[in-house]
Image 1 (cartoon, one colour):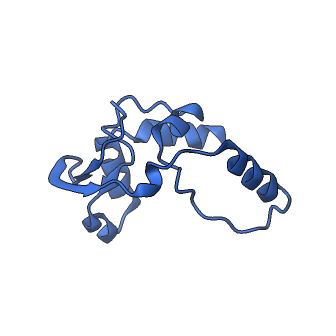
Image 2 (cartoon, rainbow, N blue to C red):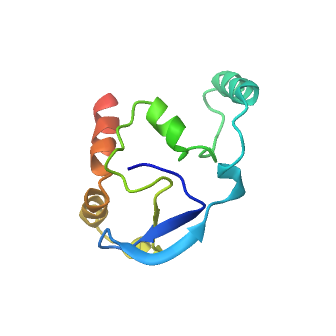
Length: 114
């Protein structure tokens, strides 16, 4: 079930909850202003070479599902993992973790859309 809580669970390498929690940053609780979203979208489209960063709103469940992602099996959004996964050397280790966290189907959908 995808939902947003004030405390977000941290997941281990095994895809299980590690028992740790982090607080949800305030930016995730801020209301989404359609006028600003429209302004930013319009200005980003003017120059395709313009660098951009990941949006603070990228993991807001409403926005994720509105883009067509099917995340019913994902435990919660935003999905936070332990720092230990940065030590992965092989892609298959990361893929295995994503499968354990039940996110892999959403990633396959992105591959298919390209």
